[in-house]
View 1 (cartoon, helix red, strand yellow):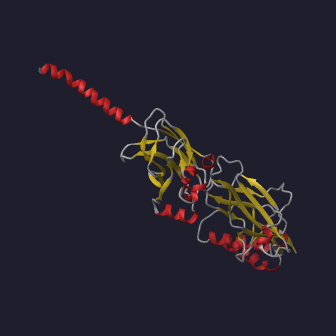
View 2 (view 1 turned 30 degrees about the vertical axis):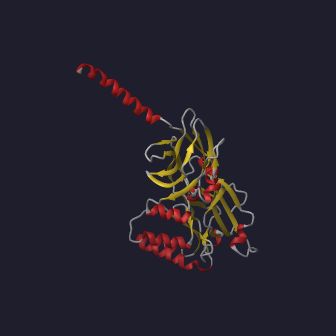
View 3 (view 1 turned 90 degrees about the vertical axis):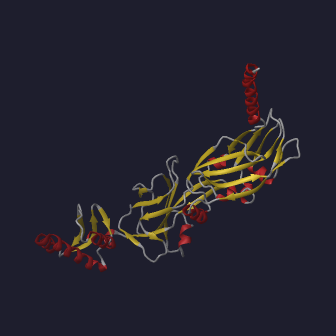
Length: 378
């Protein structure tokens, strides 16, 4: 009798294992999540896009296919999550519903926000709760200031959670890198328009420079640079910015010299310039715009006129202080010259820039390759 019982043990265990395996696979629908092209191509994505109960209910973001072919009906709910660095940033759930047996259908986030009726049934799938989480102070600050999801890699997850609260089926995770550029900032030439100070340039072909957190790697010419000449008939900066641009081009780099081949050189006068980015969001095209910078171009030949006697004397004194007797000899030979232009290391600089250079070198050992003083002899 003992031998007969021992032979039955593996059979009983095999049945238990088979039943357990059948239970785990029973009623498991297949889920497939496809992100909308508008989301995959978007360079700006707003947090509100994923508020499926309010603002986000009108933006097409994804299509979910549920395949329950060959499976019996199950009871549960759908949960949608956006995850970054293992933090769930946004989540939304539908109400509990019965998933019919042997059915396959697709529904978008818009349809589930408004209430989607499973074909051939009266069963409705509808989002009825949502939440957002801000994992850090920096993340929270950036979201509150711009309303955008900060730059980073995001994972989009959809799950079907059974009503037992334990088991679930999930769609393959979709990942998306969101850039969300937030700024473009001019650096040179000029200063912020309207601040009461105009930087003076003595060249028609200055080098323009700006910075941005936009990554232009896979974009041909993303930056739209516009330069406007402020004419006498322009009563305000805004009026000048609505005129025909003096220079209007799309470029790739953030540093560019004003081209000598330009149809309109920068003749003497006041100029305004700005940079724009045309970006795609989930709801269409948006423009990120830099502050407007202003500067004045003056004729280099006028540099030594009027009040420039002081700067000429300062330069001569610097020569004497720097190289002693040799500097004094050079200074004496320049007594009958009128200063017209100053070049430091090959670049024409203004009086203001000259004094800034002197201040930056004070008390330091630094190398100036060359100083060229242009002038006329009396």
